[in-house]
Length: 176
Ligand SMILES: CC(C)(COP(=O)(O)OP(=O)(O)OC[C@H]1O[C@@H](n2cnc3c(N)ncnc32)[C@H](O)[C@@H]1OP(=O)(O)O)[C@@H](O)C(=O)NCCC(=O)NCCS
Image (tube, rainbow, N blue to C red):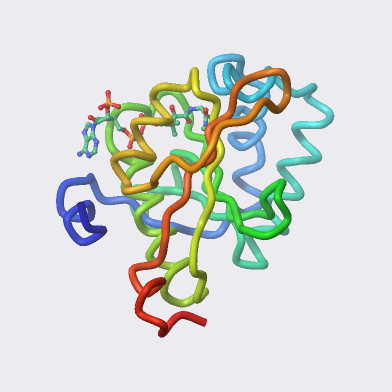
């Protein structure tokens, strides 16, 4: 499935900067047990608040996005981050959405836009995603977006699957 097709079938959502105004909702992403089931459990509120403020800075640098329905609607649906993967070679996409917005296609739509940015403007050859094998919803999301499983390993006491999405230009010799 191409990104163009995904844009047509997913509900509208946009990538926006994470602002100071989003911090309380971002903190929820770090402390709510439902969101943290496959991410090592909830963070302490103190650490969550620090991480949320760091995310605002990361977003100013163009490496993290707030997902909203439109620029006119300030509701935070979730966040998507492009950060250094543990292998220190690739950039990893990570994604957390608030439970009340699950199952609507927002994560699919937002990740498709981040991949378009990564393989376009950012000129990346590939993007990595790492998810617990037990996180079947996340595995389905990556499959839907065209990520391919690369390997499994044990990290943080759980089996993790490493997925890779390659730029459409990766085999054409035109990538940076
Ligand atoms: C992982 C996570 C982002 C997936 O969210 P999600 O709600 O399943 O993703 P989407 O918003 O794209 O919704 C897709 C689901 O809605 C359905 N859907 C409904 N309308 C849709 C539409 N218009 N377009 C696409 N999917 C749609 C899909 O069929 C899919 O359901 P399925 O997986 O049962 O087939 C979310 O569960 C989450 O934030 N979890 C906690 C954090 C986490 O574990 N992150 C992963 C590790 S970084």
